[in-house]
Length: 389
Ligand SMILES: *Cc1c(COP(=O)(O)O)cnc(C)c1O
Image (tube, rainbow, N blue to C red):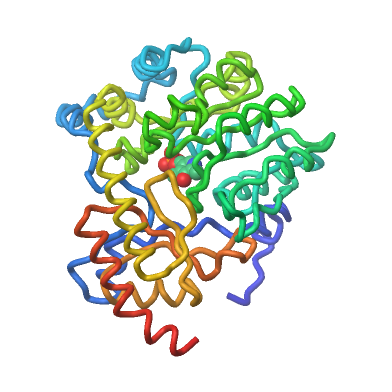
C-alpha cells in the first residue's frame, strides 16, 4: 500500500512505530496453506491435555448470553480469594493476564516514564510500554555462556537500570520465551532493593509448572508470598496455560488493595466474559487436573531435553512448559521447513527480540507422541537447512 491515508498518519507516532505481536500460527492456517490434515501445534505453550474437565463440564450449562457479565467478577474473585488466601479487594481480573500487563502500563507509564525489563522477556512488555509512549529500558540478559542461567534475567543489571523515571519493572518467572527463572533469595533481595514507588509486575504465567518441592526448598520463589509482603508487587497469573483455558481469555492480578484499586480505574467494565468467569471458577479447584498436567509436562520436558542432549543441541534451562533450543540455522527457516511436516513451533529472534536468539526455536512440551514427532521432523529437515546455511 503506497497510498497515504492522512487519518492513518495522524495516529500517535509511538503507536505507528509498534511492530504488532505475531501470534503462534494457527493449525487451520497451516491446513489451508499446505493442504495438510495431520498437524500438531507446539507453538503457543498450550496445555496438550486440553482444558480442565471441570471447566468443560461447567460450560455445558452456559450462563445466559444476553446478560452482561458480572463486571465485578464476584464468584471468580471469591474462588481466587479462597484458593490463595487473599482478600477480594486485592484481586483484579483480566482478559487473559495480558490484560493486567496493559492495565499496569496504562496506570503507571506515559511519555517521559520508563519500564525496565530483561532482554528476551515476554514480547508484550515492550508492546504495552510502547503503546502508552513510555520508554522501554531493555537490560542485557546473562550471557549465553553463563554457567547456570544462560539468557536469564540479570537482576543486578536490572536494578542498576532503574532511574527516577522508572515506574514499572516487568519480570516473568519462569520467563517466556527462554524458560529461565530466578531463585527465591535473588528475587527477594531484588524486590527489597527497588524503590517502593516502582511497580514490580511479577508475571507467573508458568509458575504452576514448577515442581512443588522447588517451592518447598527455596529453589523457586513464592510469588504469592512476595505479593502479600511487598505493596509494590503485582503478581499476575493466568488460566491460559496449565488450566488449559487459553481460548477463553482469563487471568488475574494479585496486589495490595490500593494498587488493585488503581488498576480497576482503567479496567474495561466487562473485560472478562461470562463463560470465561464460569469456566475459571470451575477450573481453579481442579487440582487433580493441575497435578496431572504438571506431571505430564515434567515427563515431556525431560523427554525433549534428553532428545536435544542426545543430538548435541544446546538448550536453555527451562522450568516452564516449553524448551528453547539453539539449532545453528535461522529459526525462520526451521519454522518453514517444519510447517511442511505439519509441525508448528515458535521461531525466535523476530520482532521485539534483540537478535541473540535468531537461531533458536521454542518448542511447547506436547504429549509424548507429539514430542517424538517434532524431534523426528527436526531430524528430517535439519541436514538440508544446515547444508544450505
Ligand atoms: C502466555 C503468557 C502470558 C499471558 O497469557 P494470557 O493468555 O494473556 O493470560 C503472560 N505472560 C507470559 C510470560 C506468557 O508467556
